Image 1: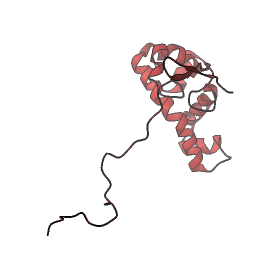
Image 2: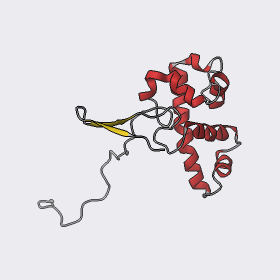
Image 3: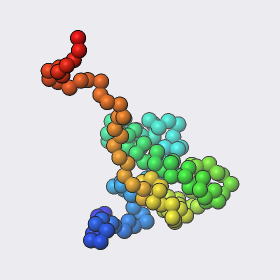
Image 4: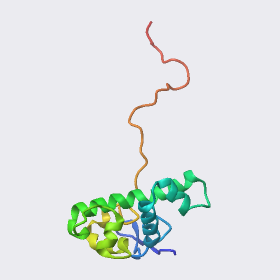
Length: 155
């Protein structure tokens, strides 16, 4: 599904209206992401879940695919459970199966409506947080630049 983008000339930015059913920054729906997370939570190991969910690719690729969906959902669940403890009821455990027990299915779509104002700070695919920036090393490289030695080196 293509989501229309619009340009705001005054703010010099583009924006779009994301339907509730779509996952942000992933090419799938929230229901599909929810199925992956539930399968990963129920499986004895993440590798077994990855192989079962994505038999068409190798295990390492399947693990990356599952982790791209699992990690941000867990972070978002922890943030919502911390900010809005009443959303998980008595469970208090930031697991998607607990959210489904409290909110029903589809839990991620319902959590979007519960989170409301916090959506901008929650990570994708549940929230609408900003893109992560590439990490750069703060240490300079250990290799020196190529070329002749600088003048006045000492001696």
